[in-house]
Image (tube, rainbow, N blue to C red; front, side, top):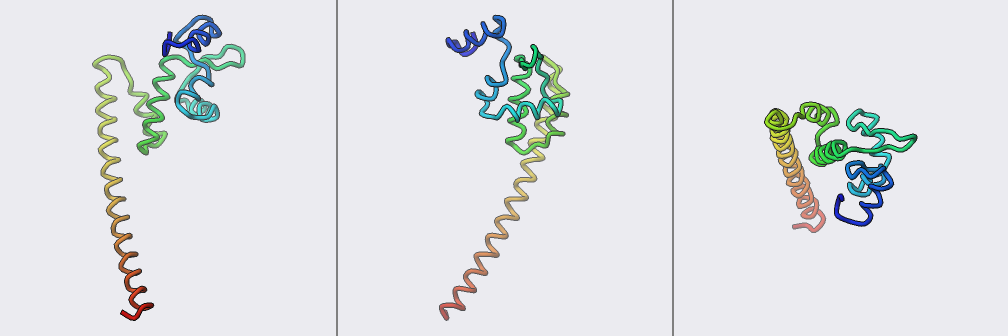
Length: 141
């Protein structure tokens, strides 16, 4: 069973004995997101849960896609970037194109963040100099 726990066994029994299906609550808890976040990613077409009545059932593939989505968001990728990368997925050696595109986007993001850091450092230096000037004026140095 997933995670080898009694809770996972109970969940599997509730979902018809399938260890590869997860409820919205399962994924929200596991990834520390809200169910609203999961529904948003579903509305955006990034994940595709099955339905059993009004219950959403997420597959292992949905779970893997959610992990990619959240990792992409954490490093600053747009939803369009994430969608593009997810759409490139193919199993096995065919996955190389997705990984190469992800690598290129990561490098682009690093360059952008380094430029932002340089701009922030320059602003901090300017403010620090301004503070020194004000301090000298106040204290008559």
